[in-house]
Amino acid sequence: MSEKRNPVDAHVGSRLRLRRTLMGMSQEKLGEAVGLTFQQIQKYEKGANRIGASRLFQFSSILEVPPSFFFDDMPGEMAGGPVKGFAEPEGEGFRHDPMSKRETLELVRAYYRITDRSVRKRLFDLVKAVANAADGKIE
Image (cartoon, rainbow, N blue to C red):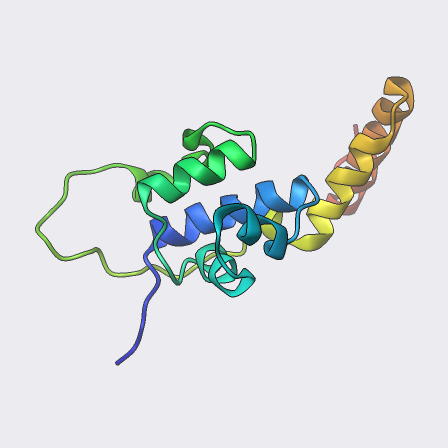
């Protein structure tokens, strides 16, 4: 029997991981806060286990975000459309979200540790210029 992750569960799990990581919280610490093991948190983050409404509400309180945060940036094909029966839709191929990469999260956290706004702005402009140069665009 092949197990397919539900795309919505995978998205919610990736948002859980994003917020937890941005706050600098380990899976173990989050698990302790809700009475779970880090392995259970890991399963939620991978979308292997579905997060119930009361648990999602707990996570939103601990991670200081509204429950809707976990559904933000959900691709349109996942979020909308009428339900066509009782069966769950066939799982689609998962695209790698750059926001779920550890490198991205570490970069964002480091960026916001820069307290001087003008330095942060210059760094932002530099990164954009390098990215545009790599794409062959000139600003």
